[in-house]
Amino acid sequence: MAQLAFILMNVKVGTDREVVAQLRRLEGVKEVYEVYAVYDILAIVEGGTMAELNDLVNSKIRKIENVTSTNTVIGEKFP
Image 1 (cartoon, rainbow, N blue to C red):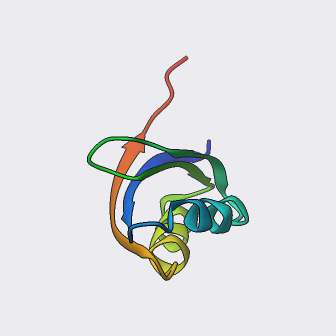
Image 2: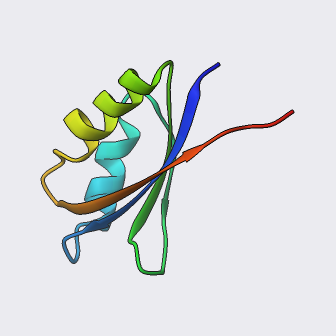
């Protein structure tokens, strides 16, 4: 079963749409939303394993130039 996570992130002012576009190009990113709260963007991501999910978040999402912080919430689907 795939590992699901919700990535809440803050970005530099005025770069929301640019970051959303970059996120949508990443493999494993299923949905991306601009939100109006403490965070600027919410991404729903999946990885086959926790290691794949960790790589996606740490090696790809957090390295996007205008992402200033992230908060990862691991989710689990129940039947």
